Image (cartoon, rainbow, N blue to C red; front, side, top):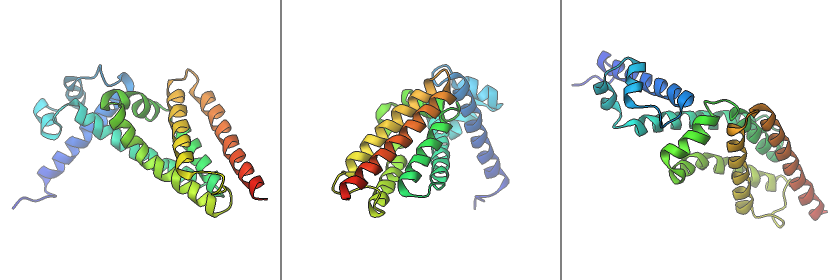
Length: 207
């Protein structure tokens, strides 16, 4: 009977993790296209056989690295959102956390520049926006319940789509900017003003 947690299985897990770690670093530093399987195994100090035992091709190890980083990003955005004192402020704090992460190559370049090229726009968009859509939609629904937004004045579904589009374009812009920090601050500040304007307009229509 095979031991799932035996020494052999532990070494296999460690090898797989090392391949993902090394591949991620290479993709962040050099991009997806220039990095070959040969380059990954050489940097990871493993054989090609070990690589193909865990991954069928370069795209598979890229996907593993991307999905891990994307999950981490979602968790950090959620932590940022929890710093807000109201639903709309939480949406704004989450967006700001996302933008700040995009100033770093690990998140900005890997998630918003390399991943669309490697996975294809449709597949990348499906993975990347699935969590963000839930967070934004939930925040807007809570804003309606708390009276920050008027259900009569806004379509939550339409507003979610518009905000997601804004977040996506802002994230790409930050990742590609020469001065990522300055670009991040400008876009985050403008997003805060936009959310405050939405709240103010909704409040005035209900008075």
